[in-house]
Length: 382
Ligand SMILES: Nc1ncnc2c1ncn2[C@@H]1O[C@H](COP(=O)(O)OP(=O)(O)OP(=O)(O)O)[C@@H](O)[C@H]1O
Image (cartoon, rainbow, N blue to C red; front, side, top):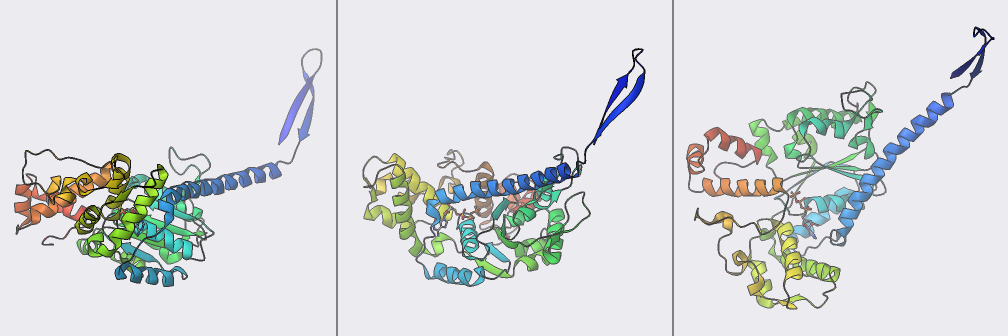
């Protein structure tokens, strides 16, 4: 860098110019280092937030008693130490994410980041740049100096791709290339960057059906499905209900300093019999609500919601169209919509032989029904 200062005579003519020059290569290098450090800090910041969330998540302890879960845990213990890609499937709320955390913690990558991304929550236009990053000036609105993608941030660690069934086909193609070549190229960039990342993917969709329908790439499916892990819904492993209830009870009771709160035998047995369509998440939310709202130290059958204590149909199952739908839990709108629409479609599909009939029952076009069946990975006739 050269700074020039003109020297003038009395008439104002420039007679000399004094130049002070300085080599700023080092400054540029320092700037580059600061940029890299900022990216690393951003990576750690994300990891820290995720850690905080997962630590508050009932001490991150995994609770189970059933043989089915024991087998799953044994399998995960074996595969955690190798780098094989894992595809975790199962209904919403069965514990796919908590199991992905568990695998990462058991793996030799545990000291490196576990980065999570929910493919359904990020708009298609952003998902690619989030995953693969971009070079400076790659597109309008991009950060001035470019940005590292999650693959780079998860280097030497694990990348958890949640709701992979919602990944748009265009991003699927790019992900497949990365998995094959083990290197990424930032958007707008030319230089491939090697990545050393273990992939754990999860979905509550039926990816095989999606492959058959052409909404999920078969080559990507086979790449991901190296170690398939299916987590059964809670109603198919009822032995887990009591230990989970006890764990959540003591967790939430401790949190609000109500250490003597417990559940009556009748209430516990009702919880054991209930089908838990929202699985462990529903159970956890219910216990939290009961601990906070029930005044007595013993939570009894009467304190449970009617669809559990009296076996009355849940509002969404109610055949009475005039009865208002009562929402009892706060949950993300997208998830609520998904649960509601899935239940509605399944309900309408009962005793129905054609998609046209379902469309008639729900008073929408048949194309809407076909689209929603695809969207939720539902199979007609199931
Ligand atoms: N075995 C378990 N022990 C303790 N807590 C659990 C267990 N399984 C699930 N949970 C808790 O239940 C809640 C839902 O679990 P998680 O988010 O892992 O489900 P998911 O299958 O990933 O759901 P989704 O498909 O909706 O993303 C979390 O709060 C999690 O900590």
